[in-house]
Amino acid sequence: MKKLETNSPLTEAAFLILLAMIEPNHGYGVMQFVEEKTKGRVILGPGTLYGAINNLHRKGWIEPYPTDPEERKKDYVITEDGLNQVKQELSRLKEVYDIGVKVLEKRGINYD
Image (tube, rainbow, N blue to C red):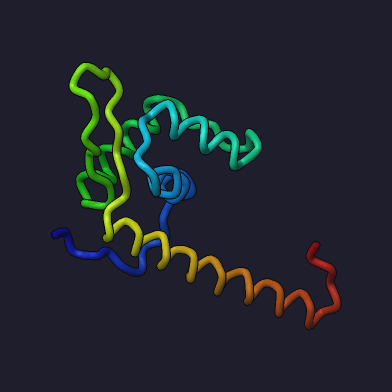
């Protein structure tokens, strides 16, 4: 099992790719998930996507998911370590969000 990397914020792309792989998914499915969930704000190109998939796999955060050997597409699914990274990132983002809200509210600034 790979060592859990801590205190390193995930890139937005890595975070979204991990979320897309909560259920087994392949590259094109991940691209669609990210574009749909971000309403087109984030569009992953193949080079970015497959580079990130290789990196996440190397870290042990995703693993190949068995599929039909006749299929050309390769599915991946998040590992327990990957899920822990998602949870850690959500906690970090919540902390940053809460700090921002408190600072703005203290100054009477509407943040919505």
